[in-house]
Length: 268
Image (cartoon, rainbow, N blue to C red):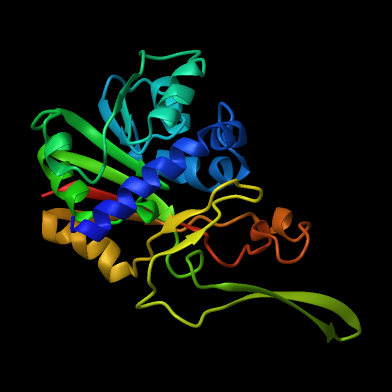
């Protein structure tokens, strides 16, 4: 990282330490509605865990995915750069599965990641964290070293086309053959080049953090250069029958636009 990226990363760590309690309470044991509906099911399908597989969960936060993978039979090492989030994860109960090991580790530190051991993991996960990281190439490069031959990396991130720093939510009313209906849409004015900007990850969040927008060719291009191949992709969206019952302009209203992008990458 250059000096500015390092400064942003250090600032991000301090911000996540400040709001760890808010984020942990928002997600609880099993994740909030966004996570339970969009993130977890798609990640589990792409991951296709087998009993006793070793998984590295990068950017584990308060441990929602780590606990779920342990419940599914995985041996999980969960890491995050925020000590406060790790404290919250450790304080949560783990009803079933192998005991989870938690450790403080920065996902942008390639050498620290690689020190976990060449070819030690069957799978690596990174969910809803890539858009919070100033650089992602070090993680991709480390993944190639950490994964066993044929091992897979499953990521979930805010969809760069529909849920980034740029889209503006819109709701318009129109007469459709005598019925007054609401038409939901997103206004996109930029996609290819959007600078980092601070934003709230959830309503009421006490401290906004920096988001790093990456168009698809950057998001996956860094992985391809590192030696990973894309062999699975999902764009989960909210169910239509539930979304139409939500008030206009709420995120959950946009059933036609996937708010999350999930992908499976394999070591070449």
